[in-house]
Length: 291
Ligand SMILES: Cc1cc2nc3c(=O)[nH]c(=O)nc-3n(C[C@H](O)[C@H](O)[C@H](O)COP(=O)(O)O)c2cc1C
Image 1 (tube, protein in one colour):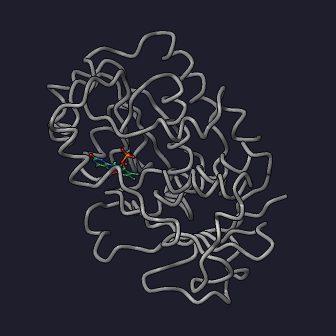
Image 2 (cartoon, rainbow, N blue to C red; image 1 turned 60 degrees about the vertical axis):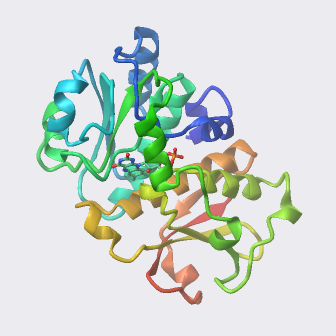
């Protein structure tokens, strides 16, 4: 199914509106929004590699008492509800997780709810048991969900610390044919793939590292996705957050293409990008093929 069918409005507006919020109004999500969200979570968009990603809404958490236990260490204030996502270990598990969980956070944005990806400092086991998950599932990330209140100093400090408002220039992220040639986005204003790449560029990533790299083929129908890892970053988390980032990037790109009238799909086809010489610490993830 077309992923934009899972949204009422334009995903590009949601991508522009979404930001990380870390302070909430201490109230549970109102029942109307909750109902829509839970319904949505029961039939989320299909993940590109077919892994089942499950979503669980934790209700009425006493965030002040439980923050420490959950390992969010006071970074998140006043959140009563948390969204917990889980996936079974498998090939491309983290990309699929990133794809589906980001779609859920965009849906939450549509419902007027603030959110914040949390994948670095959390007690995965505590969230897994609060959501009553089987032990063979991994919880790569969670998010508080609720009405965000005016950002307090902690929010602003955090955003400054990770440089949240900044995104890398497209010239550092997107290439034509191989990594040596820039992709000209200007000549394609109004073109689906240009919009899709801009939506990708605005996406969230762990510590705002933006490890996504995309190489477009000459016909602009195939786009190869690579991760360029930050040295030593894997030490921050027991899950591969940069592969989660790739799934988020794929979600934004797919939404951008579909929103602009181009359908297609992701395939795992490393042979189609085998002739592309890779920069250091980079590896192939997937290719988008337009129909
Ligand atoms: C996979 C992932 C994990 C993240 N983990 C954390 C976290 O543990 N704590 C936190 O405060 N923010 C976390 N973030 C939020 C990022 O810092 C944030 O998305 C990024 O700086 C961009 O800012 P924005 O979301 O406001 O656009 C995470 C984001 C992603 C995508």
